[in-house]
Image (cartoon, rainbow, N blue to C red):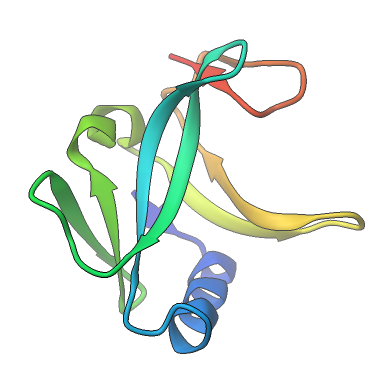
Length: 105
């Protein structure tokens, strides 16, 4: 899993302000009409089941159970007219639900 420059910049901003001393943890949850969703939370330290990812000089965590779902994924940060947030370009996805909230592999 890698970060785009925009995602790295935004994550660095979050690590320097509201989430200083924390790490972003990415997991996959069972959710939505397609079955899976990206679950991102800030945690104080890596858990025993977390993979440590380093990219752009930043550290983030991936739940070991999500690793196979995220191989080759790229995390980006997009700013749109009505919303902004982290997005994933995941080559393992076979489809998404109509609202884009969940995916299946």
